[in-house]
Image (cartoon, rainbow, N blue to C red; front, side):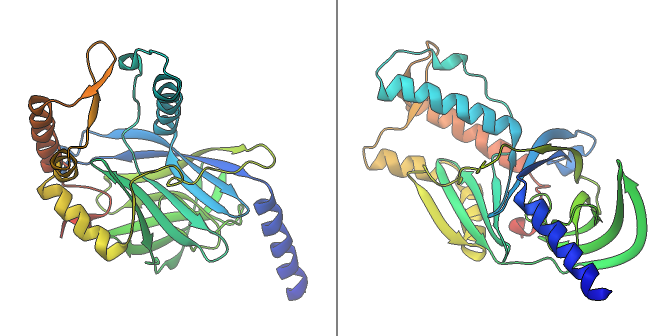
Length: 286
């Protein structure tokens, strides 16, 4: 009987993986610890296909796609376009890719003009608890762990035998449908499931990045600290090498960034970084 049950679970799991699916999460967070009542909300996609999963912002993906298409017409084809009319949405610039079946994690993020691919070998050490609840229409069970400087509570469902979840989280005997840290300032909750077209494959986040920097978790932590100290370091280096950094002027044209604009941008970034004292991975600030 035990062998039959195990076989059934295996077949069900393979059936789930054979169907490419999009799990839609609502991410609610407060990035400034001095203003915890100010909550941002972003819709995040977890696209699951046989080779692995990709977690990313819905709005950022749409905005980037529009921008890439416009830049192709403007630069590559030489057709004038008013790029100032492109409205950028979404604030979560990072994406997370996991490879199956080993669940190796690659984290993609931009710091200034540099784009990083971070190989993150850390694994969550889950403690599964007997507590059960219903999250939406799904029966779920509680689990806890400590990860990236925070204590997390997860609710997972064995109704969906996918050992994955939002952000870098995985490793429970079912899909994570709700996840929240102990300060209740970062939470993810499953809001919908969509079947993706047959043969669908997500695009690797670093595929077309001309300045992709590959690091491990330890070296990325140092790069993050360096960026917080001097957020315009890479742009200054480009300027010193007589390489142009472009911006969009009021008429919608691409022009060289002026020194005045660069200084204004630097002050904006410094003030923004000071407020971002409640980031998801708190251990990056230590």
